[in-house]
Length: 195
Image (tube, rainbow, N blue to C red; front, side, top):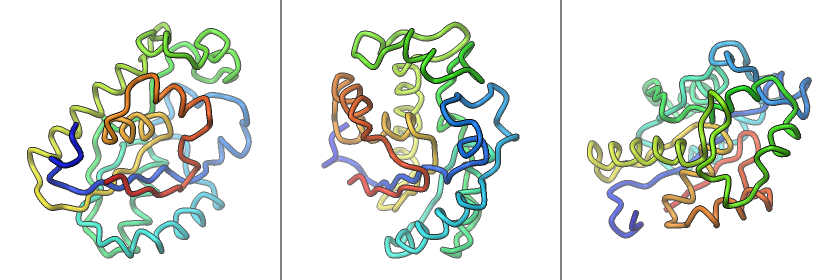
């Protein structure tokens, strides 16, 4: 997508830290974690801190993944900014890692190393990076179709946001994989302006 042709300005916010991240280090979220994993107290503090910076950017709309941790993140920001409630969109969900949910991350990365060749490869019962890219592109096209001159905050998950950021910046799949390998993804409650 050509940044010069974007009708809106996009900002990204990763959800704050969760109790699962604090306790289950090195493990992938369980498969059915849509409503089960809340922000930790530390995560709430992180989001409140980020909201202070976000306030300076005059956000018009907030769109968020429908997972509890992203809904809670968006709600904290929405209240800080005095905006109407965030709009939930399943296309902003975390990547579905299929049979690897609840398992150690190193098992997933052993089978799906961070290299360009795995971009289109999906784990059993899960999604590939290309699948997630497809749904975030659809989300973005809809935002561009329905809005003009809006400042849109997208609250989501690490890989989903990194894919969206790469797409908005016109980067290729090899660039995404390089950024992922470098650890250039967003930290919990990290806020970024894209264009």
